[in-house]
Figure 1: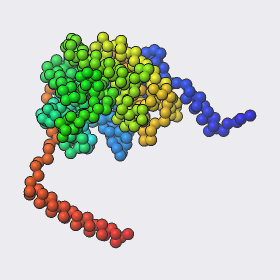
Figure 2: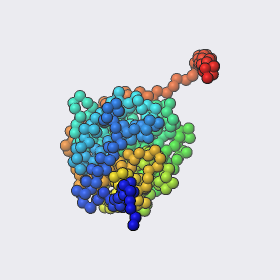
Figure 3: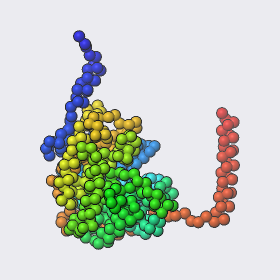
Figure 4: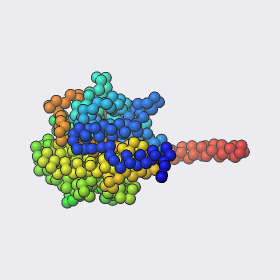
Length: 463
């Protein structure tokens, strides 16, 4: 007769439990319960409200931890959506603290501490979360703090500034904000997609035509430069200014498709069904469902998932795609019959593999596999948990209240001048180098080199 030690019995029990599943999407109540547990596990990766930690960010950026600054903004947006569709206020205080703490010195989500990795898309993710807070009437901040709408306007104003739009490639935002950052020479789709998306939503919320005009101009630029294929509606990643943005990197990511889909849905809604935006919606949706839900309607990241090369950033894309597809269907109800069944099948696949970890409920990334797979080395799982929460959120969206406007119950205060004059805080180009500069640099190099040689000589003597 076989006997078990305590450790073996525990392992056997865990194996048995792992074959079952903590989660269900059989009813709205079941979905809310699943989402609550997933959100609880997501926040286990957050330590910003603990003594000595920085509010608002997940552990990082590298090498301090795996997550860049922008992922924090994306997580709070997910939790704002979670509150919106479930009514659960558990995390509202943390959302408020985080979103206000990270506004930066200029109150436009450009904190000095993250200059080295500050892209227009990074700033834009925080701005989109603020915009969402205004649209779903997330509790307003105290009167001495910037409003949600004002923060979204501040981000948009800095990005609409002439300081961010040069003549290279005939327009468009660059990837990075500071000129010294690696990638400043790249004009990428997601930065321009977020700017388009926010312009559409600000225009709908405020009724200000300037936002809408910029949104259309941005969409036309992205299409005109070749980042959107006018036939297939595939959306590519971007190009370099030294090649006039013609060296297009044709990799496709789901969040590019989704951020434009939502923007087009908002434009369609605001224009009461304009043909241009219906064409955009139809094209992006058809391609997106085929390309990013290719097998059994389950979310898939084709650029990296099959070969398991997804970065921490890429591991979070499924969640945005679920949320923004659901929001798009609410803005353009005629696509709901196509979107809702796919999101439900995808969410079902997600929860099926949420059986990992000590409690047999951790969610992974490889939804199509149907089984939980141990995360890649160094992957702590916040992105996967965020994806899972978003999958649950997307199922509750059809019965949630639509995004409000200033005329339909919005309470967030407008600040049309927020962020004005702040765009070039990190954006100033270096002055042309003069002969005097070169001479001065040569002298400084000589002095530093002499000092270094002396230091290294002293160190060698001491060994």
